[in-house]
Length: 102
Image (tube, one colour):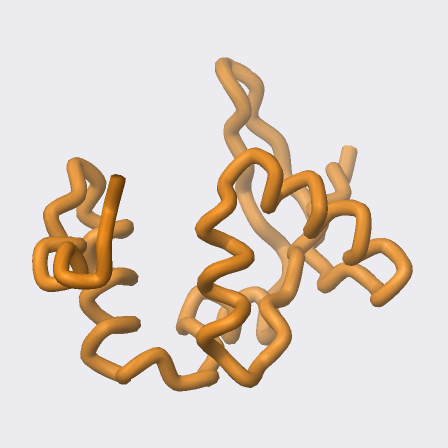
């Protein structure tokens, strides 16, 4: 079980992008600024997606408040640290939905 003192070692992830996000969050003191990837989606919502061997183009959008609630509950059941992170920031963490563009 992780404890607060473990945060000094939280950047030790096998995935570089996770380690970088963690470093940025810890360095900022948990401020409520949107990450760059989210700003990029707002500027250009067209994205390339790969799920297994399937690749497709999709359009990203932020879930509406009505859509967000059930998705957030589902995500927090899968990964409870989402709820902990949400309690540490003033901003509402957005949920991004992807619609395939065929």
